[in-house]
Length: 253
Image 1 (tube, rainbow, N blue to C red):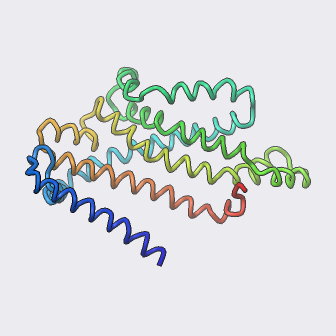
Image 2: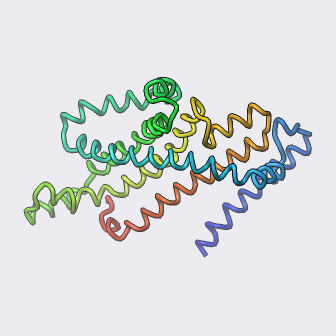
Image 3: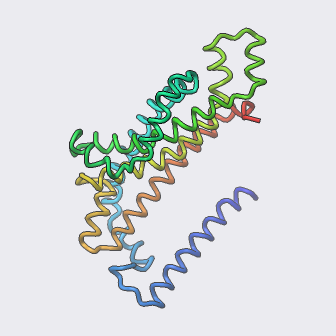
């Protein structure tokens, strides 16, 4: 019953939103160039499906690689700053400072340094996704329940054994939580990169559609980005389900 509810309720919400959208356009006679009807957007999706698929593959690759880079660098840094007060004092303020910088402002510089290829998009996606992974992982590692640490001490576990058997499994719910946020942010980072300098990807398609006042195609590109973001989020949620047997009994109290 709960599974049915989880499917039916979002569908009802989507159908309701589409109905409001349609009647708003009809009642107020909104021009197509400003806001197309939902059916026009659906027609644009169907007609441009191969184009959306090709451009979506580019954005998908940029997002996934950017996220993986953020994960590969973010988790070790979180381990370091949660294990050392000196490293925490050295790098945590720097992390906050870099996160407060608008990535759109950094994008032109990255374009100059890395060019218009995939490298600049990966760098922006990495920058955007890096912070939540580091912060959430460090929070999880610092919050290991005291009784688990006491248990490790009682069996004379060394530092590595305590980390691998106790602290990291206990922090995994936080790692996954940060990853869920980071994967969707990586899509945003990839699109920012495509906005600044690219001739491919869904972000570039959105710019092209806007320049041609093809609002239906622009909405189709937005639909593609939404599907991409949800699919990547679902993939991380799937990893969480797969890992639950490992960290299920290690949740923070």
